[in-house]
Amino acid sequence: MMTIRCAPTSELIRVETFYRETAYYGGLNAADTVIVAESDGELVGAVRLCEEEGILVLRGMRVREDFRRRGVGTQILAAVDRFVGERRCYCIAHRYLRSFYGQIEFDEIQLTAAPAFLQHRLAKYTEQGLDVIIMARERKPKSITAVT
Ligand SMILES: CC(C)(COP(=O)(O)OP(=O)(O)OC[C@H]1O[C@@H](n2cnc3c(N)ncnc32)[C@H](O)[C@@H]1OP(=O)(O)O)[C@@H](O)C(=O)NCCC(=O)NCCS
Image (cartoon, rainbow, N blue to C red):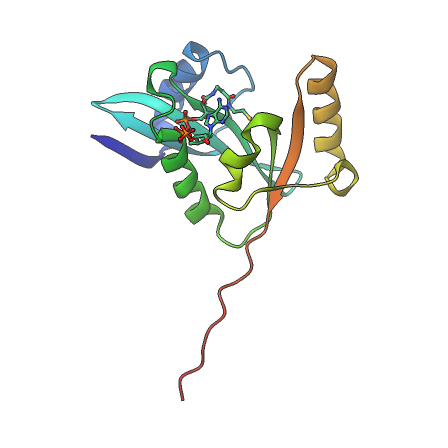
């Protein structure tokens, strides 16, 4: 059975180990909100929601290789959707994952519309040969119909 949940800070080392095993070297902070996917007691997916310069950024989306293309990433995104709610949130994504993140209303934005630190990060990734884009989402509040 697959469980999707927020990992408490007591699980930080476990998440670090998962990230190392799945070749993610972007770090992990105690202040991050980490959403994990767990199958039979093993971590098989994780994502970080980081507050950077007061801005919410999705980072470190990883699903274990043998669990990919089975909807685990999509289930993690559903939890991200609930956590982020109506706040503005950014992510730097591989161009080929535009529709993956689009599932929870992330849209590609112009580079110049992104916070400067994300523009710099994107430039660094591009220099490394990665084809990446900046995406953002800011879901509109659901309209409330007044009942009188
Ligand atoms: C990206 C990643 C998290 C997706 O997780 P996942 O559990 O495999 O994703 P899902 O099974 O929920 O995929 C849902 C849909 O997203 C799209 N998608 C997922 N992975 C994709 C890929 N590698 N290329 C293109 N589209 C992809 C597809 O439309 C897929 O539906 P389909 O399988 O019916 O075609 C996973 O492949 C991963 O960990 N990759 C390595 C790390 C990485 O690239 N992280 C993202 C950095 S931006």
